[in-house]
Length: 344
Ligand code: KG4
Ligand code: ZN
Image (cartoon, rainbow, N blue to C red; front, side):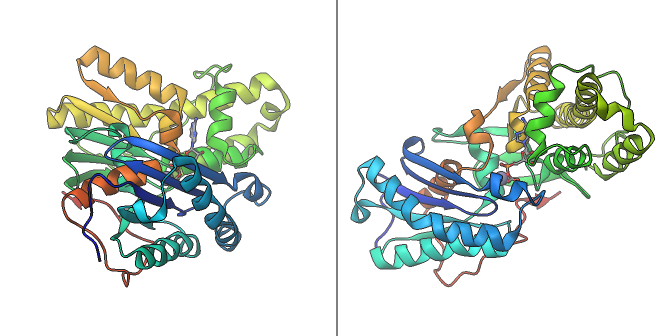
């Protein structure tokens, strides 16, 4: 097998959930191609992602997508320096498709294969293009995970807190489902909340005691369920729906902002980075902007395309590992429950 040549492009595959994504990247930030085939609409009628359906769709999408990415980037397979695939956390039947494809391709080309953690891809996404990852606090808020992490460079992660039950994105999606809104509900709640009054209804915030950086959003979900049972009329008017969305968004974003602010004060860091699908949320972006400017902290946000699942973030995080001489054996299994970072 050839050694990784840092000047050769890396091909990365993401298939942990309902998006098949392929990216080809040169160096730490030259995206030659980044393609996404989303199945969200197909899963929408089930109200969530069905693993077997996701797996079958990945299988259909992956090969044409890789060929399109190669064509678009003008890169020939024998010019690639490494193959990377998201190897966890995620849905096992979905992960298997991308990881098997990348392993097979790397074996055929005789180049390194790297199994990458999806959360690490999100975590580093705000720094895409950077040769070095600065010391910072990372708030990762996706559909499956919510985590506050102290980052001391690529690969050095200390977990300060994470969710004990539902993730922030899941809280958006599940409350949206209770309201009868389409999946994925986070985007829908965010959109409808723009016209609503966030102070109209009060929802609980959990684990708010000092020094606690863990999260819990299942109580909020239950409280929205009871609220809807008691107040069915709210869903009859556009104003009621918007106010409810704005109030739910305020409750979720409020917890994220407060805990991030406290963790920043505690750790005496100067930089905060936010990643994952919920990083696209308008209220969160605005709230963090205010929090950071009033404290003189630097805020790193991924572009909205890099916030939700994509393969460019997988290629970027992988590049840092490959550069450090790391790669994986092709016999390494997928890791559906893979966590990122050491718990402090
Ligand atoms: O990171 P991501 O694309 O996939 C996972 O790795 O989970 O995150 C998807 C999550 C979904 O829960 C979706 O509802 C949420 O991100 N999301 C949003 C917004 N855009 C996506 N949540 C709130 N506001 C948004 N604008
Ligand atoms: Zn994700």
